[in-house]
Each structure stands twice: as structure tokens, then as C-alpha cells.
Length: 142
Image 1 (cartoon, rainbow, N blue to C red):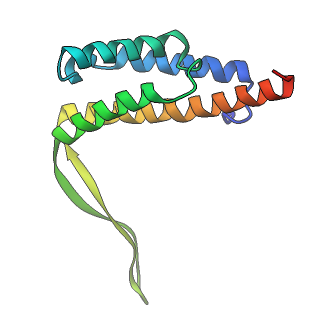
Image 2 (cartoon, rainbow, N blue to C red; image 1 turned 180 degrees about the vertical axis):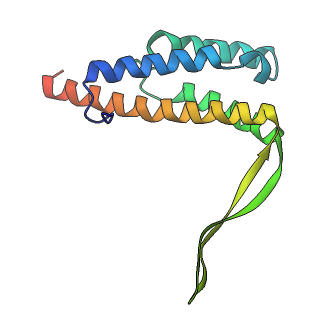
């Protein structure tokens, strides 16, 4: 599979726009907005993402708005945390690795977590695309 770094710029932009449209289509905006004001702000933010994947923006305010709403809702849907060990048991040194905590979520929480991961992927890809667009403008002397 071709990496995003070597992908032609047009294809990269198209991928960002497609990911943004998929994200907005699947986003449960009516289920996460706290009130009418937040619902209206979220609607405007998502409409902007659909238009051009947020590529015309110079900041990530749109992603930050959605990320903060998802983080708040994920916190509400967290049932608890389960400790987990990542590593191996070395016969000479004992347990070698690190301990992490895994979030225990409700079904709705798992759906929101998938949305958060999709948003983070979109943000990373969009950042790469913006960087390449800026480099192209610099090279072209604009």
C-alpha cells in the first residue's frame, strides 16, 4: 500500500475530503450536543468539514470543537479502568514492560471512541495535506 507521504497531492486532498465526508455522515451529532447552542455550533463545524475537508482553514478549531465534545461524552460513558500489562516475563529479570489502563466503556462509549479515532486520523492526514499544499505554494512562488 502506498504511504500518504508518497501519494500524489491531488489524491491526498481527495482522500482528506472523502474521510471528512465519511466522518460527518457517521457522526452522531444529535446524540452528543449538550444543548441547542452547542448543536448549532457543531452543525456549522461539520458543514465546513463537508465542503472541503477543512483544507481551506489555516487552523484546527473545527477538529478541536469536535474533539472536546467527544472527550466530554467519552468521560460520561466510561464505566471504569482495567489495569493491563504490556510486555514479557524474563526468567532473569522478571516482568519487563509497562502497565497501562484500558478504559471500560458502554456500547455508546465504544461508538464514540471509534469516532474519536476517525477524527484523529482525519486530523493527521489533513495536517500532512496542508503541509504539502504549503510546500507547493512555496515552490511555485505564491
